[in-house]
Length: 194
Figure (cartoon, rainbow, N blue to C red):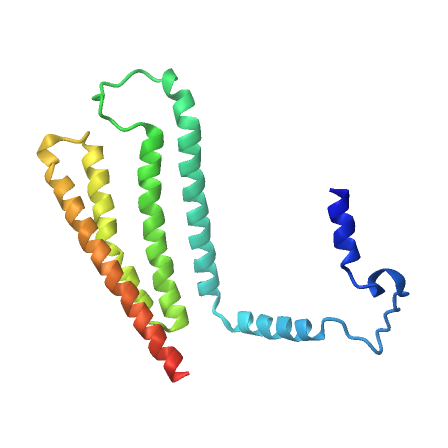
């Protein structure tokens, strides 16, 4: 360890150790002048933005954090206290609370990813990214089919949901592939135009 540190120190330029540090003169030197100008311009842009956009974004961020914290709390605390409650008459194929937390959080994460991809398409001006968000819709439908089927304890009368989930997965994979290709072609066109 010491050998590695000494080897690293020997690679540093000599002036780091042997030159006398210069004094800062506020009349001559203006450190971080570019950074100050950038920060001032950035604050002007932030001031021009309407408050409703910032507050809406903050409330969306808070909602996402609260949802994630709730799911984490349920998945961590739920199993340890499950023995205190009376035993319900659930079938043996019922999903446990942590498994439900994974299912629900996956759906929430997917819907959040769709919203973020859409927002990126709006902010960047690349409309093809909005197509990716639309391409994600069938996969969200498949996830909702799975959650619905599990909610009713994998009932045989609802096995059509399994087939529907499979079909939506195939369709969703195809639509996402098409959307990814559209993003590729639009980025190629924009790089040729630049």
